[in-house]
Amino acid sequence: MDPSKRRFLKRSVVLLGASGLVTSGSKEVGAFEPPDVPPWMKSPGAGFNEYGVPSKHESKVTRTLIRSQPGTTGSGAARTPLEALDGTLTPSGLHFERSHSGVPDIDPDKHRLLIHGMVKRPLIFTIDALLRYPMVSRIHFLECSGNSQFLYQPTPPSLTAGQTHGLVSCSEWTGVPLRLLLEEAGVDPGAPWILAEGADAAAMSRSVPMAKAMDDAMLALFQNGERLRPENGYPVRLFLPGWEGNMSVKWLRRLKVVPAPIMTKDETSRYTDLQADGRSLMFTYPMEVKSVITRPSHGMTLKGAGLYQISGIAWSGGGTISRVEVTSDGGRTWTAAPLSPLVLPRALTRFRLPWRWDGSASVLKSRATDDTGAVQPERDRFIADHGNNAIFHCNAIQAWGVAANGEVKHVYA
Amino acid sequence: MSTRDLAWAVIAVVAAGCARATVVETPNLGRPATAAQIAGWDISVGPDGVGLPPGSGTAAKGAVVYEQKCQACHGAKGAGQPNDRLVGGQGTLASKTPVRTIGSYWPHATTIFDYTRRAMPYVQPQSLTDDEVYAVTAYLLHLNGIIGDSDEINARTLPTVKMPNRDNFIIMYPARPR
Image 1 (cartoon, each protein chain N blue to C red):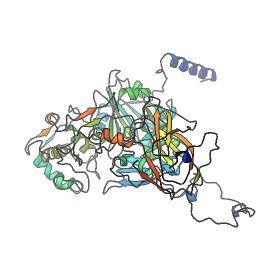
Image 2: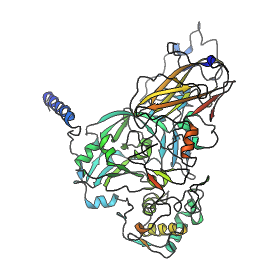
Image 3: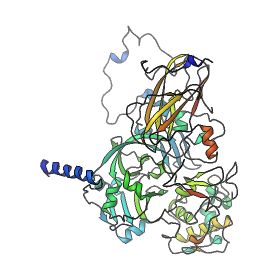
Image 4: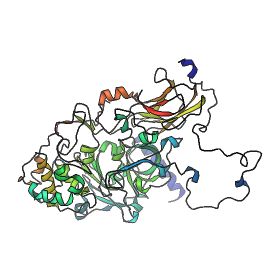
């Protein structure tokens, strides 16, 4: 195949909008098209409502691949439909969910946060009290360390971008810097760890290094401008920017300053990474540099040769995305994709690139680099380094195969 | 506070921020927590055994509790199904089909007590007595061939139990060369 036929267009080409990629059912013509005037212009529209919801025509855009342990409804996860979204912020109602024993129904007036252990003054806070503390707002991704775990499978799973990578979402989080409360409690400056515990039925708990707690850790009360959604920790959660999601303990009820990690179930038997040699990595906190093309992606069908826009997201728990490269020939040639201007540390970053598809079989991939120099690895390299036995922290490059008939499927290439 | 006071407060914060980013005034709304309040909530148990309550149990007693309250989800003798398998798998971790159980994988025996007490049984967490938790812990250790069926597990003995996979974890914080 002649590579020149499917080279990327130069940046000067006008970027097309997101539409026109996927067939969307039957096309009615006549009364809706010019010169006719559509019926919704011929009578007044609906009135106001107290809390807005998406258009009924978007009802298929939902969390996806919702799975729970046998016999349970709330011990599992629900993923963000990345392929249906654009931009960098995730609607709160579509933010991924990961819970270990369901979503508790917490009355904020009856919720308490206890800080104790190696502190001079053990303290109890109400939510009303926390709401009076100095707050900060930051835009950050949150990613479950089990995100992209299907790429450990020996054969490419038949799953959409959201089903494979939708355990990452991005929000503006507003809350109280944890450091302020620890200082008020008179934290022992030499104390190295804090046990964080949720008020769910699993009393989910993780040990957090003091250095993170005193750096950018936050007690988040607001998500995208409104109070946290129940499934994201209402009324208060710990938020640790860039670190594996389960450490940002939801429904936070207790912080105990301790001399050593508690070695909870979730930091020993669960969120550790079994390597091919039988040993396991423990305390693998930051999420690695990663990217995925969300459009086109698995399950979509291109409607013939021509100009398309490749769009995707990149992120890194290690810092800020500095570069995303895209290939349409399976990795022989790579082109730097422009980043949408909102490029923030530990936040989803949108990249877009015009692509003229020549109608031949192609393999699309994206490769992200962050400002520490970390580069997203090819899947072959990643599996060679880590084996297939791990569940978490997979940041391998995702490939989408485009067939000559336009069908896009998950491939290993 | 007048607007002028507010302005000075902002200047103070900004000036403090230049010197040291930690000086932010807070309203001091935390209420002192009493020892009794803390005791009611402090359910975490570390590998050193700190936090383990009085009480004890053996595998023989634990088998009874297990059959009543655990077996429906974890199978007879911890064999698994419909939920996590708890027993066996030793020697499989480097194979193509690793079986991660308490016996093959968990590095600390204290975690069994901590997790069972806080989160199990799934439908009725924090309902077992401390003696029942000790007994179930002993039973699971025994099923995995780690202790005998009459060995007593209590606050003194549990932290001394050496788990088979204890030395096969590589601590990645703070360094992480991946």
